[in-house]
Image (tube, rainbow, N blue to C red; front, top):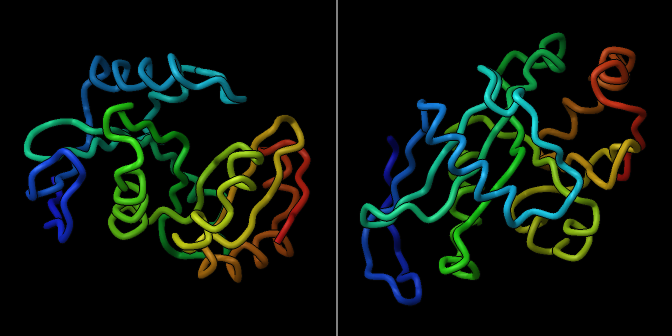
Length: 185
């Protein structure tokens, strides 16, 4: 578990520590996944792959109370020929309604970028376009549209050179894993 000291007070919360824990039990992962699916009305379809060894569930807590979670997915195999490190993507984020608009999602995303080698986020195109400045402020600069649905992958600006190498060197491999794509950098 990682802990980071807060410098600000969440409205309605006392100053304290935000901690992050990785879930290992299927029941705990399923609980958070169900919370997400009850509120989410978008294009991600649930599958057993969400619980595979390529996915990790991270929960953010404050003073012992769980505020939300993120599921990240390992895509290192797509980049192994041009990038020597792990590459994780945020697949879902859910913040409990009573903790929304308090910076919880920003804290989760920053933590995942800093400690889990996250380089991208899988998101609805409309959500990205409606919150463009927010995602830019977190370091995301553009992405790849999944033409099979209303979703896209946004990539961190500092990862764009790696992404360019992947497309030049290994476009076919990406094409096999992800449906036809269009870049919008």
